[in-house]
Image (tube, rainbow, N blue to C red):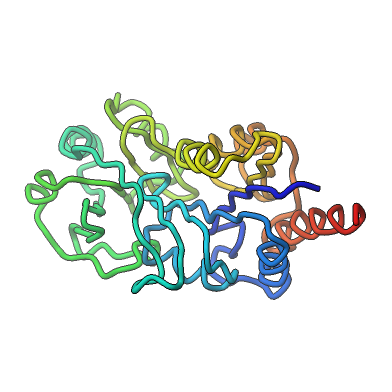
Length: 270
């Protein structure tokens, strides 16, 4: 069996929705890395919240895709910080902020800028930021250069929020609605799949040797990109439809089943 390039979502795939990685998933992930496959953590999380997952899986040399494709890291534990940013895709957040504020006036906002800092309104913090956000006014946020813009509403359900966002006519950006009333915005045409494709070409992998697993709407492009796209069992129907197959839910270690299956196939060919 040839070496595989494996893109793995974090929340809802590698870890449950409380942020816990089970022993079964950790062992399977570390075994896949140890077997020589190229595991690329591919997440909506920002850099600081991605690095602990990289460490848990024992990736000492490799790559990670953060901020839904907005930031790509080269992992190398010999570097002073253990990594370097090799790609950062930015955009002007002002048009999107203006459009969203008109329809969702009570929403909270957070922005990852081109230096990796987080700016937020209304003391908005989230573990996916990886750093403590600095409080700013909406006008200051509009003047920043963004790699990731997050919008969160406490006044609507995910479905209501999704419908509202769909009527905004957002232009010049790529966006996805999460499990809750949560919106992630990246530069136009940028998502996990676009970043993974750049890495695939750089690393020389054939498309037939690509695998990806995820559970969220921000994983749809990645699952369609991979030769073998695997949706988690708890994923929404539209995510499952983008995948080639569906595994068990995260709470039943669905990813471990997939990774162990790869290892079993590898062993059978020896």
